[in-house]
Image (cartoon, rainbow, N blue to C red; front, side, top):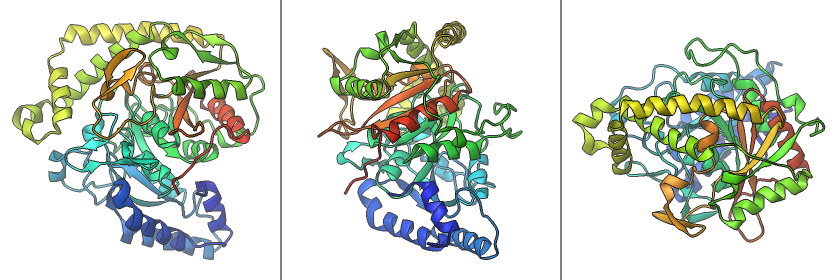
Length: 458
């Protein structure tokens, strides 16, 4: 599948029309999505009208933008004007349609991209499997009997299946990176607060990030560039000046100090999950290791804060309509509602201590390599898995390596790696806050060396 920027270049050059590109994407969804179940809404009429407008701009000699005519779709957590924001919940289907687009949708549209639909997710984004009791299960495009990951499973599978080249998702504890790894695509979680969350249904506010999934490093960098900027609709979105990363991705890794995360990040994973990290390290000539201290406690504290904040957000409905929740989500929210306030406060105090310790680590290293998931995609309905000699729950442990990093809002790009005769896996490229450009430079080198690549089914 062509990446988004290549597609946009063809549209701007008149080699193909935006209308034809959109028509083809809609046909793919009609013909193929019944296998994958990525989409919960397809906006065919509006998408065709928007594509025609892009073609008109080009005919008039105007530049419609960096992503001219590129079809994209968003997790159904994002407000789309005129469409009810489901957030994967039966209860939300009763809400009125959104009055306006989420800020990040507006920005992508202004760059010429064409919104084509909304994508499946775990209820209220609380999960790693996109096995939704209300709206169905999204299947992994590389093996239809396996999960796509979650909670941005629809977003990852839509790119992995070749339905669209670009999607938006959200990441609280790994909800972009986990499905990106399992579906074999790129998944970007920027620095906390770097991109606006206005018009995106919250899950746990002190963790929630907006990000993108796609099929090339340069698409990820370009999307990040387009989506940056202060937004007074989201007070968390800082007024830090935008850092434009796309022009920097060809600068190589000279001067970038790279190390492999050891200790916690080398335990509790399959040999394959660790092998892909070594593949990346070998390509980069990296043999240095670094320890992120107390990552296990960071993950435990992330569980406490996430459950507490999520439960508080939905407490009234948990009391009045518990039967209308997805059972898996309801039980975790109810458990979160019972967490003592003292536990939550202690977790937040530890969070500050942990942030300072990781900041010290980044005094000596710029980018850290770590596995994205401990295992490739489990089977749909699989409840447990074996990691080492321990049997653990799938839903709880798919975020084993992502949670300690989003806990303090670090920027991370999950890059897709596929060993011979295996399912896709991912490697996280991790940097200190606001250092996304370094991550993209490293990822671009890996892409140039053929270490990372998108392999779509068929």
